[in-house]
Length: 198
Image (tube, rainbow, N blue to C red; front, side):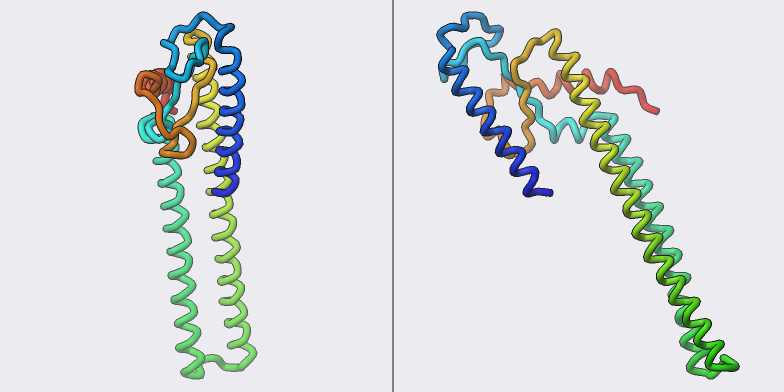
């Protein structure tokens, strides 16, 4: 998954560089710019960036989704722990009875052993199912979050008219940018104003 992220980020950076170099060749033809021309001579491009880490930490929709996922994860953990504890007690009881010859016949001991083995298998299947459901819901939440941000940016950009709005996550793609191009706070305020808690 990380390798895929690096590949996508690398391709995005490469596309940006190619587009940037093409725009640099046409810089003389472009005369209007709402931002001052950067030192590299490219004019006419209106670029901004958003600190994604800040959005994830302060966007109320994201905070609520994370809290909900933590609760669900905790419920899954508690359910599985309780069932595992019950199973361990049954295993210990079986072991004690077996050592004390409490079963009338070997067949009865084998039946009890098979019953406990089936419970263990059922617990493993339940664990896999619950973990899979959590992962699926986490992916769904990520898509909802991405859609929410993208939809807001489309509306926001109708008025602002940026050519590029770049995401900045740590040092993934954007190594340096003038703070004048940082629109994170505007985006965060707009997203939170639009968000209505369920």
